[in-house]
Length: 432
Length: 130
Image (cartoon, rainbow over all chains, first blue to last red; front, side, top):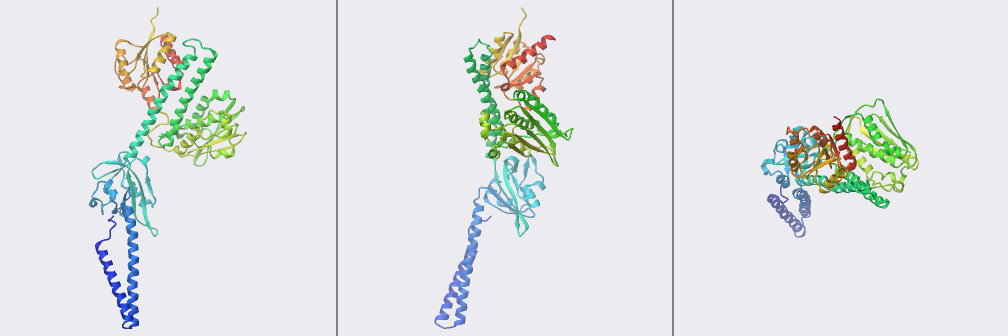
């Protein structure tokens, strides 16, 4: 991309035009005023003004073009334009800087051979090069931080890159493509630091809480002598507080990781009905305490196996089931049903509990949100488990929603694509 | 008098180490050996052969997995039972630990100390029966 200055030849032509314009105007005035040659005078005058008009038009065009050039020239991102044969037509200084290239190394070269892209340490095939895809499909191609796309500069240094690549369309025809990119080394470094931070923080928080929990437990069990009723009661509070904090840290960790979109999803073929049965067994003590009968239905039976990440699937079902039990105020039934639609599997957890007020339903999946009746009925909740469930379901390519009526119960439904959960690369498992 | 069974506790967090020792002392069933690092644990093993090792994984220096590998590759130690009691339990770590032949993997924040000690008791009893 040339510098936003006027070329000397353009300046010369413009200066010459101004001169001619002035001569024509002067000539016109002289013809008219002194010699009274009406026709000639008028012609000269009109020609003079026409020249000035054109000059005005030209200079505004140049200004517009220069303005655009200046914007592209000073952009913080690298920009490269190619034609339909992938030859580099123009580029800005930032592109040159990021790639450590001289202008000659880029101009008129085939972008597929001068800019190598890598994904997972393997060279990206020519047909999968972002610019080739953009021109080939006519659609914008975006690679964000999660994509783990790398470019190699002219010194052979590989660096992570964030880019967007689009076809250039003129009058419904693709005439080339443009790629805008930046070096994301800093962002990557920050992301890694963040992942270490979360893991370390959770370990550092859990250790003292575990010791609080263990020591108070020993005191409560009378390991070091009998306690008075009041002492026991106070200690019970300490013990429960520590236990609650341990759970909260686990949950916050899960939410932080999901929210950062960094959860790894590794689906394997699973009998999900059996997985649900196991979860129901785990919850049976709590269900019995609240006098809830849990029923599992599956249609068709036997229910086909499905590729799911068991840990993540379990967390979603466990959270929904746990809520169903918690928010059931009277003895009742909880039904978990598995069904198969055209292209997805639908799982529903339905209770006969306190339900969700209409006005709260649209907020129910928001972080820390708790409906008024839920808050009154069970003040201890955190309002995190549903937002976590939503993150996870959407991360695997499913949908989650709820149907409810106050005092009648709530039904939470979610889907998994028939082909299974979408695989996701990421730096963390949900629990670590 | 019957000689007490020995248990080696490898745990670097001082408060947790104290809690575990106190718990075992109150039961007075075992002789408790302690180490605050994997290296110190190996040092204990030179002199003593415990009936069970209680092993934390996140340790300064060598680390729990390296300790386990050393243990399993040394003929006189390779059959010593190990119970992992760690703060984190990813499926990968659990699998790796079981490949190194541990008898159990416990995520410590999820258990009461009483219940972990119960697991130790059960294991020791099952051993005594044999």
